Length: 196
Length: 196
DNA sequence: AATTTGTTTAACAAATTTGTTAGGTTTGCG
DNA sequence: CGCAAACCTAACAAATTTGTTAAACAAATT
Image (cartoon, rainbow over all chains, first blue to last red; front, top):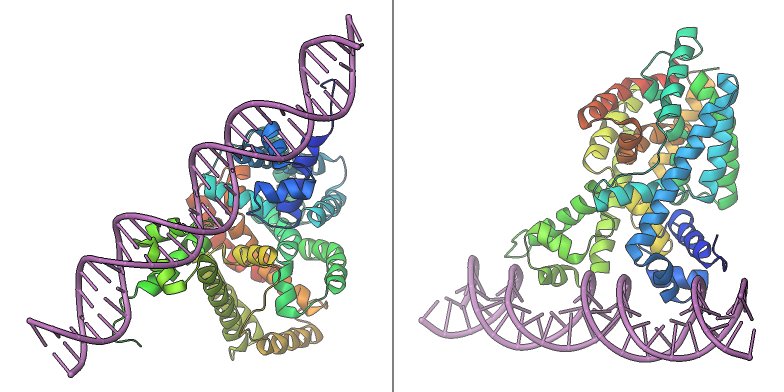
C-alpha cells in the first residue's frame, strides 16, 4: 500500500464498472466516467494512462471476479442440489448489481479480437462437470453433455436480467412486476433443471 | 421506387446490420461501416443524414423484424408443441445470422434512454400467452406465470449464442464443437420445457 | 446532344473524444 | 519548518469521428 491512498483509483474503477456493467452504457466516454466519479478526467489518465488500459483493467477484473465466483460456488462442500441452489442465489445477486457484465465482456472480445484472459481458473469447472455427470449416472439429472446443463443453468439465470429492457417493452412490465418475477425464478429454475 | 435505384441504401443498412448484429462490434464508426460496404462515407450521410439516423433506422427495422418473427411463429396454426418446435427452428436460424441483435437493442435502449418503438405487434404475444395457460390447465406444462415459460424458452435459445465467445474461453470449445452443441439443443430445449 | 435528376466522392470543416503538460495542492516525514 | 512524493487539475494539443459542400459522374428523358 502506498503511503498516500485517496481511494481515487478504486473510485474510478468502480464508477466505470457501474456505468458499463450496471447501466449498460457500453460506449461511455472518459468524460462520462470522470463526471460520474466526480473527478477530473486527467485523473483517469494519471491512474490508468489511457482509456484502453482502464477498460482492459476493468475487463480483466470482471473476468477474474466471474471466474472466482464460479470456482467458489462450484467447490462448495455441499450436496449437489444445495450447491446449485447456492450458485443460483449468488449469481442472481451479482447479476442484480451488474447485469451487463457478461454483455460487456462479449462485446469487448468481439471488438478487440479475442484477447488473452489472465488468471481464470478452469479446474473447478472441470471437476464440477464431472460431478454433474455423476448426478446423471445417479439418475438425478437427465443424461446429456454436462456443458448443456451449465448452459441451461446460466441461460435461465442471466438472460432475463440482460434482456429486461426488451421484455419491459414487449410485455409492458413495471420494474416491480419484473422484480417479483425474478424472485419467483429461483425456485422455478431448480424445478426446471431437476424436473421435480 | 425511384427511377434510379443502385441498391446502395439497402447495402449500407445490411452492412451496418452485419457489423452490429453479426460481428457484435457495437461501437463501429461510420467509417467502419462505409469501408465494409465499399462505399464512400459521404454516401452514408446522403442516404441517412446522420449516424444516429442510420442507427435508429436499423434499430427500428430490427425491432419490427423481431416482432414479425414472433407474431408469425406464434400465430402458426399448429398444435402447441409443433408450434414451439417451429419457433425454436426459426429462432435458431435467425440467431445464427444475427446473434447480437438483441444485445444491440438493449444497449441502444440503455444509452439513448428508452426510446419509443414503432409498429410492434403485441396481440399475438397475448393470445400465445393464453394458449400457454391453456396447456398448463391441460397438464402439458407445469403451472406458472406464462411469462416464465417464454423467458425460459428464449433464455435457453438465445443466451448460449450470445455468450459463445465467453463459453469458448471458459470451456475451450472450438467453433465446430460449439455448432454441434447448438444442434443438440433443439431437441434438448423441447425436453426441458415439456419435461418429457 | 443537351438537360435533368439522382448518385457518388474528394476535400474541407466542425465536433467530439482522447491524451499531455506544467503547475498547483495536499500529505507524510525527517 | 522544509521538502519530497503522490495527487489533482486547468489548459492545451492531438487524434478521431462526424457532418457538409461543391463538383464530378452516370443514366434516363427531352
